[in-house]
Amino acid sequence: MAPERDRAATAASLDGAGVADGETVARTPRAGLERTLAAITEVPAAILVALEIVVLFAGVLSRYVFRAPLTWSDELASILFLWLAMLGAVIALRRGEHMRLTAIAGRVPGRWRALLETVAALVVMAFVVLVLLPAHRYVLDEWAILTPALEIHNSFRAAAIEVGAAFMMVIALARLVARASLAQAAAALALTALAAAAFFLARPALLALGNYNLVVFFVVLVAACVAIGVPIAFAFGVATLSYLALATRVPLIVVMGRMDEGMSHLILLAVPLFVFLGVLIEMTGLARAMVDFLAALLGHVRGGLSYVLLGAMYLVSGISGSKAADMAAVAPVLFPEMKRRGAAPGELVALLSASGAMSETIPPSLVLITIGSVTGISIAALFNGGLVPALVLALALVAVAWWRSRGEDLSGVARASPREVGRAFLAALPALVLPFIIRAAVVEGIATATEVSTIGIAYTVMAGLFLYRQFDWRRLYPMLVDTASLSGAILLIIGTATAMAWALTQSGFSGKLAAVMAAAPGGRAGFMAVSILAFAVLGSVLEGIPAIVLFGPLLFPVSRALHIHDVHYAMVVILAMGLGLFAPPFGVGFYAACAIGRVSPDAAAARIWPYLGALLLALIIVAAAPWLSTGFL
Image 1 (cartoon, rainbow, N blue to C red):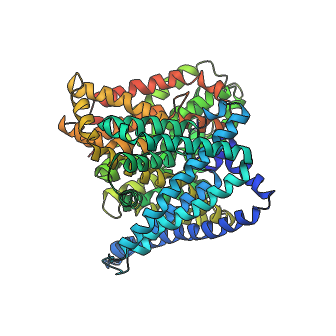
Image 2: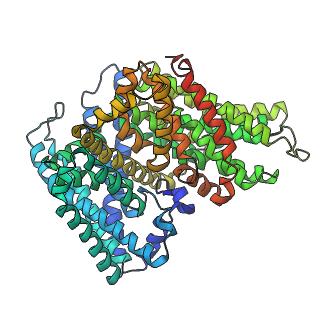
Image 3: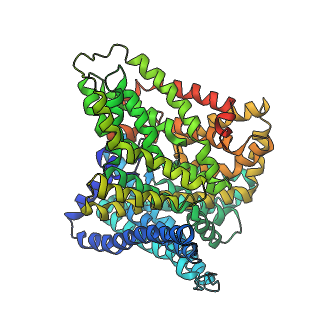
């Protein structure tokens, strides 16, 4: 399985499509179209990321420093945000960075694999074709609405969906022509048309099934699309549009409204900003300074570098919010020395994967922000509640790391002197302070969870320029584009998953699911056990954010009815998803760690189970002790 989610990880081995496809396109006459599409999407997207940072930071300064709030800042940020989300999704499609499953299609023989990839490309095109007309109607309908502060027509914001869909259509068609032979294209088109015709002819039977037709659309169809390599966002979108078109009388324009609502929630603006902050701390040297200090403090004891890796992941996760960025910042610094001391590469990747699962609830995790946006839970409460559960899991991993490192040879390792430790601490102090600044700004009401990322960005830029004197201006534009691409891939999933969740709710499925979950034997304990199992499976197959958007609104009302605290339940399901996310053979995060560590998954899979067992035990402790999540609220 491979998520096309992070440029560093993708380039290493997750999918390889982005680099390989780019090279292929560069050698064809279509290189001009590729460069044109890059210019007209990447430059505006990079500018939009920068503008969002400036606008939100200006809002913080005007409100908190000058006591003169800018009434239009949030509104402008929201308008720009939908454009950023759609242009980012376009860039992700062009560069092959949308999250998708490749494990199944990757095992198919070459000729058949090419056919499946062509069918997957046609499914993407089918989604875009189905979206274009409703998106245009949605833009026309939104013309009558004026924004309250800027008083401009809301169509200027809504047009982002239509423009993004049009760009995706051009990209999907160009990629189909470039990749597929005429015979492959004809065969794939015949298969796709046959499937579409079968669904259309089966419409009376689907209607007669009642709610059981949900299994056909949202289980069978989604599973088939994901299995052949269709990006998850497009699989969700095709299933939702197909269900509404064939099994209901709901106009497809409704999907545009739900996608708009899902992608443009202002809380989610924290996603691109924290993604950018994550790459910024690596570029400015803050991440390296933290790791160097921890290595000087603990590097001389048995298992010391394992503890450093866990501590670094705990601290870096509190800044970047992106698991792939966390691992990419820590692993290259520590792995060479750990290998020199005799650690097996598979062991290192196993520990790195487990630490990624451990740190899922450390603020400002993107999953925390997402779960707050779709369930209405306070982001500040989630930020406060996530630290101690992650610490419990970290201590469990420390115990396993201690046991596994008992025979480590430290004969050639020199202990850092107190002066060296002190110097490393002073060098790392500005970096160590950043997580506390982020948390304090939210808790004290200085900035919202969305705005606080701009404070972190401003702080990191100043630290890089004046303290660490490490700021590569040439990397700034690629970082902004990468941020837009990753954010667009995430936000398009949230948009299509929001539409799918709405369709499931309207069908009555949510009520039946709630009744089944509420009737789980064992009351609250049984519900918690079923939730852990369900979200671990969902985390391995769908990744954390899609699973949360789909099932969070359905299951949180059940947990409330059982008098389970929202923050406590959020911590349990997030950690359960993290466990699935990094568990082989399906866990997306596990393969990301293997790619970053440049280690075969086979070498790491056999060594990860003791760490996952410790995480599961710690998760059970967190589920059984609510005060670990709510004690500091």
